[in-house]
Each structure stands twice: as C-alpha cells, then as structure tokens.
Image (cartoon, rainbow, N blue to C red):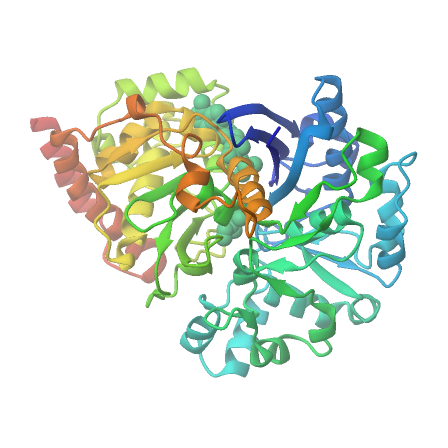
Length: 541
Ligand code: ADP
Ligand code: XUL
C-alpha cells in the first residue's frame, strides 16, 4: 500500500486526510474541532478569550490533546496506521511555541501510556502561543523596521514588511516584556515545527515555506538572515530551529505513535509546512497561472510565482513554495469569523445566508459595510470596528450581502499589485462549499470559479507533500505533476461563471468600495453622494 497521511493543525480544528498515491483514492477525511471536542481548554473559535482584542493566543497543549483525540478517532474508524509510509503536516502560519531546555528529553522519552499534552506541559517556557490573529506588536514592527532602516528594506530581505502576526515581532515582544521567560526559552517553534517535533521525538526543523512567514528568513538565500535575527532579539539565533527545504525527510516516527496507534517503526515524517503553502499544493498550483482564494478562518488569496515579486504597498507577502519556487499571498483576517458574526447576530443558518445572497440584488442598493469586526490585516486596521455606509445595523439582508460584497471587493482591489489578470479562481476552505458566496467572487473578479472535492486542501497538500518527499530520490520518484494528478484538481462541473451584467455593476462597486475605504481609513472624501447616485442607477436597471 502506498498510503500517505496529511495533518492540518489549523485555527479551529485538527484534520487528517490519507491518500493512496497509486490508486488515486482518498481514504479518509476527518476533523476534530477544538471548541466542540476539547471544551476544557475554554476556546472560542479555537482561541483563548482575551480582554484585549489585539491579543490572540492559543494553548499549544490543546493542539496535542487534539492529536491524541484525532488518532483515537481514526483507530475507532478502523484506519490501518501500519499502512502509512510517510506523514507530513500543515500548521496555521506564524504562531509560535516556546520550549525550555527540558523539551529535548521530554520529546525523546514520550510514553504511550500517558497523554501527549500532560507530558509536554513541563517543556513549555511560555504557557500560551501567540497566533496569526494577534495584532498587538505594532511597536515591535516599527522598532525592527527602524533597526533595519526602512519598511521596504525588510520587505526586500524577507519577502514581507514587518507584520504584527509574524513570528519575529512576536518574539521581540516576548523577549522585551517577559525577559525571564525568554531567558528560559531554549527553542522557538512554529506551530508546524512544534507538531513535527512531537511526531519525531526531537526538535524538528522549520521548512522554507513556513519560515518565510517570520520576518527572520532571507527570502532569496532561504536561510536565517543574521541582520533580521539580530534586529529582533538578543540570543535569538541559538533559539531558532534549522531551516530545511519543504521536501526534507526529517526522521522516523516517534515510538509513542508506534506503541499507541500501530504505526510501523519505519514510518517517515516529511517536514511540516504552513497551511497556505500546503494548500498551494492541495489545489495543484505548482505553476503560475491561476489564483486560489481560500475561505477559511482567514480569507487568503495566493498563487505560484517563479521569482519573488514584492508588493510596493507593503500589503502582500512572498513565501517560498513547497516546490522550491515562490508563492504570493495576501491575508484578510475578517474572513469566516466576519461571515459568522452576521449569521450569529441574526441567528440564521448557512442555508438562509445563501438564500439571502441568491435573492438580493448585486450592488446592495448602494449600501456598503467595511467588515472590520476584528482588527484587519489587509488593509491595515488596528481598531476593531465595522463601518457602515447607508446600511442599517438591523438590516439582515443588507448585511449578509454587504459583508460578502465587501470581502470579495477587498480581495479583488488589494490583489491588483500582483499585476495578474485572474481568469480562473480555485476556491477552497470551509466557506467554499457555499456557491452563492462563490458567485459573488466570480462576478467581482470577472473570473470563473471552481470548487474542490476535498474541503481541506491544506491537509490534502500535506498528504501529497508526504508522498513527494518520501519518494524523492527513489526509483518511484514522482514529479509534482504526477503527485497532484487525480487529487489536487478542481471539480470541472463545479464551474461558476461570472454574470456579464453583474460584472459591470461590480466594476463600479469596487471603485465605490475603495472610496469608502479611503474615507474611513485615509481621510478621503465622503463617498455618500456617490453611493446615492449608484443606488439610483441600480434602481433604474
Ligand atoms: P480553518 O482551516 O481556518 O480552521 P476551515 O477552512 O475549516 O477553517 O473553515 C471553517 C469555516 O467554514 C467555519 O468557521 C465556517 O464559518 C465556514 N463554513 C462552513 N460551511 C459554510 C457554508 N455553507 N457557508 C459559509 N461558510 C461556511
Ligand atoms: C497567512 C495567515 C493565515 C494563517 C491561518 O499569512 O496568517 O492564513 O496561516 O490560516
């Protein structure tokens, strides 16, 4: 059997997909939701409640408890762990885990009779992990950029200017404000390398893909940038794991998993990566051409790139891709949680949400909402506040359409810097199941949109990366084209075509949306008269 397992440790859940690379079958697709299955950790949507909306942390022990639970679920389903040749994984990007000097011994000596979270607890130098939703490090970003010289210089060096959620600024904050605990920190992992460390029973390296999201890696040399490391925190260099290419075999599986679940002792582990680099593979974007929009907890827009092209506006990122090339990425924080905010405010289900989208008119009668229910990453908004133009707070139908049109206009407007005319969009992530949302995506971008069979393309990408990495250098080596064939392909029949009339309406809408953004964030002209005019035009149609 040529079975490969991909795990995805995301914001709200841990998922697994297993594939048989020879027969082309997907053998399982399961998930453990943190809020539902691990209520003892007290999370809301996977994160710890905090009085300060800018501070967003999670408990790394919860991710381990989820791993025990997920594998127990697979065992109960009768999954044959001994058939797995290699495992890889995907982690929510940027989040960091701080381990003390006991970690090495703890990782090595994991006992199958005891829970993972209980065993790892004494190895934590910091109880909680700041994750990608944290936006509390503006000061640190400014300080690092000043140390380097400018925002543009940091972007040129690392592929992104300093972002609050990126690991470097987060480490700086910890080192500056919690110096005692920082002194006791022996290794700082990303979510991906932390989970991989547990899988192999020793400190795992960080792959180039996830390493790109730290403001610490030289994006062209694909090695730690001494300049960035020094500008971030003293003594950081020795605390960083090694960097490796994404297809590196990082070791055999820890005995813990052999004894407890029945993996073979020679099951290999391939370096874990970030969820977006994994999704790039999971949707088959191994070459430039198409773009993918992932509607997960965050909404992301990404695509493959042969050489690094950096956003002048400082909004996007360049990451190393699992194929060894590059990928571009833009992240919008107010994704699923903003959609859910409206759904919960009016206590409706996704069916009703979709029905409203299907029965309301594009352009929303000139009503616009800037959906910053949480501080936003793109565009940069530090204060959580949804801003409404002509939209009543109790207007259910207007708000449902408003939030989706806002999200899709924002993605279309803020991805212009890539200079790519996107005619085909691959949609993935939990909300890509919703075809009414995808219709707005198609119309706003004047592009055809396709869905995927696998809901979780990050876990699928991890499974395919496991196969690619494991077979590399053997007689059975597979090209990326061969690896993705039959798995990471959109469902042809799922095509959603743009509607010509709506495309025209949205061309104008995108400009008006931009005007609202300029007014709210940059002191631009009041767009209300133009919105009224737009509303009159819509009525006349
Ligand atoms: P992540 O991997 O970031 O944890 P997922 O990609 O699994 O997130 O997406 C989960 C989200 O998908 C849920 O939070 C929910 O808001 C959204 N979702 C699920 N079904 C639908 C639907 N039919 N319409 C819109 N959103 C949906
Ligand atoms: C990407 C980002 C998010 C996380 C969580 O830069 O912050 O997409 O990876 O999914």
